[in-house]
Amino acid sequence: MSVVGFADSPAPPLPESGPLSPGARFTGPRVAVVFLQPRCNMHCTFCITEDNFNAFAFDQAAGLLRDLRAGGTVRSVVLGGGEPFDWPHDVIALGALGRRLGFTMQVGTNGIAVPDGFEHLDAIDRWVLPLESVQPQSHNAMRLYRGRHHAIVLDRLEALRRVSKSVTISTVITQNNFDEVADVGRFLGKYIQRGGNVHAWHLYQFLPIGRGGAVHGAQLALLPGMYEYVCAQAEALGLPFRIYRRSDMYHSRTVEFYWMDRGAVRCGSEAWAPTPITISALR
Ligand code: SF4
Image 1 (cartoon, helix red, strand yellow):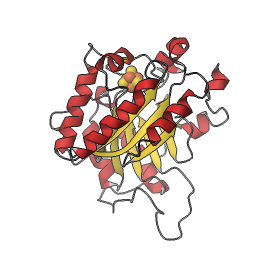
Image 2 (cartoon, helix red, strand yellow):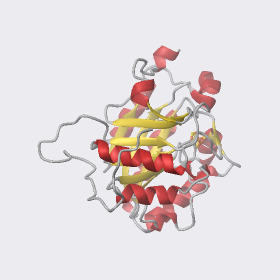
Image 3 (cartoon, protein in one colour):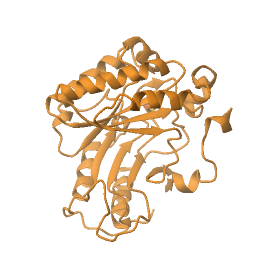
């Protein structure tokens, strides 16, 4: 990886939306998702993560952030995995570096191993947490962690609500929970009424790929048209935050993905561009 020189003195924060500067043209991704490592401390039936990439060393991840800052289009960075808090390096220190570089820093986590007082950390602007259903049994049947992952997520959401910290919710829609997604939206509406700060809700279509999805495709794949129907149901709730349809999470005009492979940083637009992932293509 080439590391473009950029001093770590505080940079002015970059706005998350709108042009970078008057007259600036869009020439690259606005959001960078960094897969810090493939490893995770839980198992999800639909997990699309593959085991075929390496963990970043801290300095490699820091170098990538500096490169992204020098590139000039990225405003927001999501630290993900696998599970970022299963990474053997300091996620919070990396978040603090990203903020000094001017990024809006987000962490996409299953919430299990977040540090005590995570909701108060200045290094992270926003937490991205999963919620597949308001029914514990349904959620826990999809997200396998000692039968109590649902309770952990609710606990993390409560901690964030108490301090009005920004959160984005991600929901993976499968054949097992498609009829429970609207209730997640209603739950989020009430969460906001109670002082919660929901930035956005991402609705991911299940894809039969990865270490979980490839194994459980026959059980979890949605029938044709169901994903669009469920998204329309959620949008009809009129919730006061943006809902993003993510029918193919790996292909987006504005989001780029980065991971480490045998000492080199790879990115999704190079690795995946010729083959958009669609359900019909995989059936
Ligand atoms: S989908 Fe589940 S198993 Fe896969 S990385 Fe995320 S939390 Fe871990």
